[in-house]
Picture 1: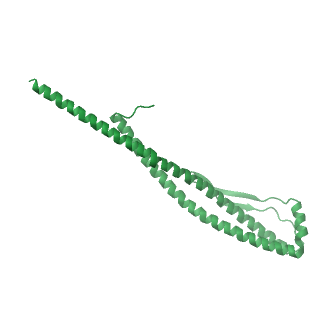
Picture 2 (picture 1 turned 90 degrees about the horizontal axis):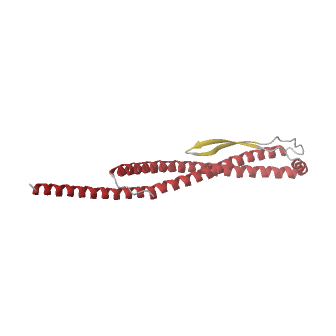
Picture 3 (picture 1 turned 180 degrees about the vertical axis):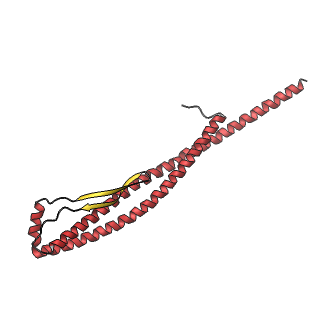
Length: 203
């Protein structure tokens, strides 16, 4: 256990730590505010992406139902049993304020088979490809929001630890040290006055 600060050198060290803690709190608050702005932007993007996904899926579902009504169910079932090629998604990543998150997702559906039962199948397949792309965009936005949420919570926790615990403790220690040093100064001044009186009284 280290000994409590007692000297003027300790005071200088404490003042430096107080200044460092204040600057850290300022930087963390600035980062927190920037993350909050980015969080709001991404939340808006996620809301729009989710809405677009729901609309695209609704359109695709309607077109598929139309194609099935025109006799495409058997061909669709056979195509599904062949395990069609999977789609690929390639996110574009951004690193900002110490957190990495996707800003966009390029989605490429698997190759479309020749579906010939009815002409309605082509538009339905295109609509599902568009819905898949919208889903990838929404998923990327949701991941970005989760990562920003985590970073914001951690930044806020660190800022509060500095502002609410570390800085008050340092400032209180500094005040107590100032009182201690003032007391030492008064005691030294008293010793000097006493020594002067004794010397003058001995003449």
